[in-house]
Image 1 (cartoon, rainbow, N blue to C red):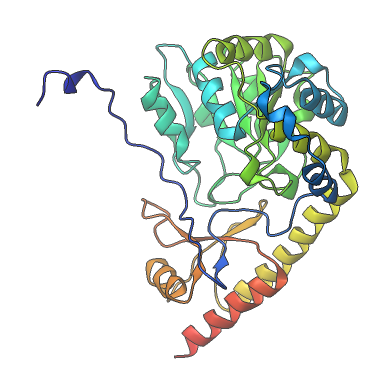
Image 2 (image 1 turned 135 degrees about the horizontal axis):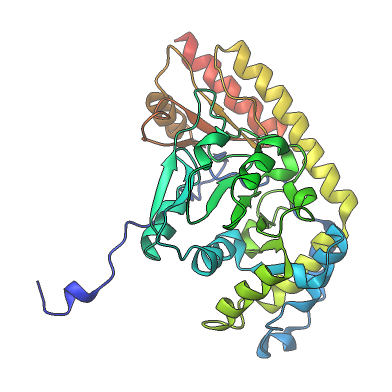
Length: 352
């Protein structure tokens, strides 16, 4: 080993979903929205003043913060923005998880959590989900350095009722509790309704899923002003200009078109209902989905083999070779036509 090599920080990085680029492929592996962003987003792009690109963007992301604050009926001092929810969550880890006690999150969850914990040297403990992939709130009662979990969960798509979140918050008044709501717009009520009761609650959401803007990288957090100020202090300590000029302009327009947003999420939920029935008819089982994907398993067809067979036909889904879930596939909800092609192949494969 060279003298300097033992000074390099070594971590096992997060592995994102495969990003193939093949003609006529059906891409159902990264939970992207199959529909375009709001029409106003295209209008902004068509008329964007290129001269703005030579200027630094507003470090406070003021226009976007204001649009989000108006939309969610909160104060501007309650909104934090970042380059996708991953950026927002990473800053939250750096800001709030600084105890010698371990933070808690589920054993089956968003696989970036342990990566950030290792990177920022945050001790952690995973808490096992129940057999139905739901959270056991009592597991989060012991003393800890913070709590984080997705709702709906990734990759299971299970949605927890707000009573579960409230119970966890009631037993964790002295630490920050982060609810990662990347998929909440396809599920039930957001934990935003709990903000007035819990100053230690932080909600993180994204434009990547329900607003069809994964390529723009826009994420945000909503919480008590003291939490947001602390996050901004950390952000400004290493990068003031995180949001690009185009991201700010397009993000504001996406928030403004609420009619399109609700129609688009309703369309995906309707396709999800049809997909649930189609999977059931083929003998698959799954937790009740609350996200824009379904987490399916079949008693007779190993998930790893199905994954490979689908991939050969340029149909991409997500497979996790991990304990407890290595016989499941995570299938993003695409257009009706994409889902019909998926089920046509599965029927053909199972009839061989």
